[in-house]
Amino acid sequence: MKPSWIKSPSLPLLACLAMLGGCSTARMDSQWIDRSFHDGLAAGTRVFVSCETGDDSLRRLCEDAWAERMRTEGITVVRSYAPGGVPGDAVGNAERIERAARATGANATIRMKLAVGSYSVFQPGPQVGFGIGGGSGGGGFSFGGIGVSLPIGGGASPRQEMASSTTLTDLGRGTVVWSGGARTQVDGDALARVSALTRVTVDAMRKAGVIR
Image (cartoon, rainbow, N blue to C red):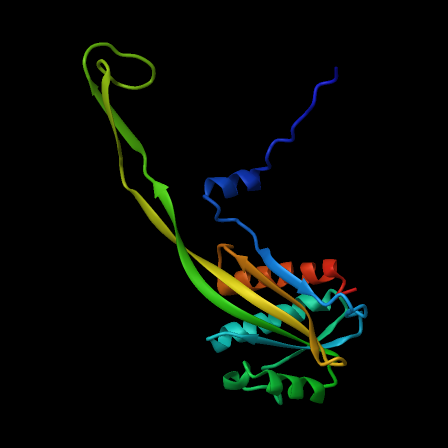
C-alpha cells in the first residue's frame, strides 16, 4: 500500500498559530439574496458606495477600499464623501443616499455599516514547578510525589474586532437585492481590517452571482 502524505503547515500558518489567532481572517456571518435578481453587476457598471461609521476618517478609508477592490472587477465606484455626495451626518439616510446615487448615474448602491468592538485573548506565562520528597528525574527538578506548578506573568491581551453589515440596492428596481454580514479579527490598523471586510464581502457577492 502506498503511504499517504499529509502536507506540513507552512511557516506563515505556524506563525499565526503561535500568535494565538493574530492572523485570523475575515469571514461572512450571514447572507441573503433576492433569487429573482439575475442581472448582476457587470464590468462597466457604476456603483455608489457609502460607509456608515462613527468616524469620518474610517468612512473615507472604507469607501476608498471599496473603490480599490471593485476596480479589479471593472466596476466604477462613486464615493459618497466625494464633492456633491452626502455629508457625514446624512450618510445613514437611505433616501439621501439614493438621490445622490441617481444624480451620479449609478446603477446600484452599496451601503456598508461598520462597528468596532474588543475581546481578550488569555496568554499564559511560563510555568515553574517544585516538589517535596526523594528522587529526581527527567528534565525537571523534583523530590518525590508532591508537586506544585505556578504561572509566571501572563494575562489577557486585548484585541479588536470589526463587523460589517452590507446591502446592495438595484436602483432600477429600487429594492435591496443582496445583503450580508461579516467580521474580522485581523491584527493591524483600521485600513487592514476594512480591506479584509471589503475583500470577503466582494468575494461573497461574486459567489452569489450579484457581481459577474
